[in-house]
Image (cartoon, rainbow, N blue to C red; front, side):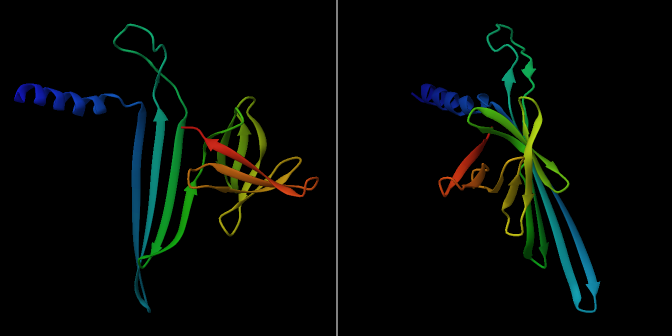
Length: 178
């Protein structure tokens, strides 16, 4: 009675380990600076967390060979920086550079010196610029429009554009691809 029960337990615990389709790399870098001055001693801790997620796909998934080549797929990188002064968080920055999808069209949001570029992946052309505001929203500008944008809790980019013809706000959601 024990042998079949142990065999089933082993089968169920190992089946979860085998079926992994995602390669995840987490890296945390912490820098601590202690400053002594006339007011006393203050401690500044800067923590930078980088998470890289890549879906694993085979070049030829239907082949019968045991060793298969992995197809290159996009890597979604998220970088979060946090600065604490004497235990209180002062600023948090999240890098939203990744691949997004809007109505079947793939886009890449790429970091630049002043914010982000929105690139169409079909022809690698620039569709606009995202610039961060003081309240953690973004202003999106392109050739023919200006919108307000933000990243929701799922990491998707939401752009809100005013339509003067209908006197309404138009919402567009760029869904992050994983």
